[in-house]
Length: 195
Image 1 (tube, helix red, strand yellow):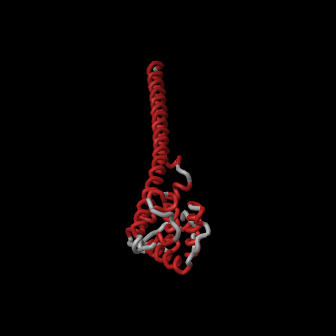
Image 2: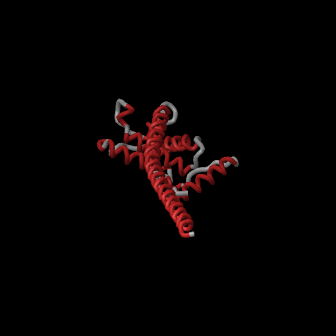
Image 3: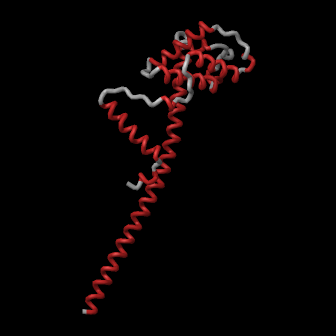
């Protein structure tokens, strides 16, 4: 196929992996992407808590010296990560996704229209404040869809280029075929005239 000429090694490898994933899913296995694709490399609950407070202090420098309750923070963070794992993902991916949601929370804090600035990880509580998590999940999904649409546009551009080259190659093949036919005709008519 002509398109293969324009695929990078990574693209070919990604296609192979997708085929294997589809096969395993058809056989009833749950398949996850490898951990290297994680946006944030958070490995422990305390890392997630520190990530939350570092993002908070970046967004609200006045709150940098806020007093933390580590026991309460761990409990809330643990419930938050468990809510991610209930979606069927492993702990490492759940920690990374929790960090993505925290990143979105502070990136778009103004969209929540809170009366007061975020002062603690309590905003991620899974009881009364579950709506915050649900809104964050929707925002994350929208971001991922947007990223995929950009990737799709880039893919379509490559595909269009490949199709243009394929058309050019087909035209060259036709020109070669026509030239060959003309030579054969010249040879055929040349033989009749001399004979």
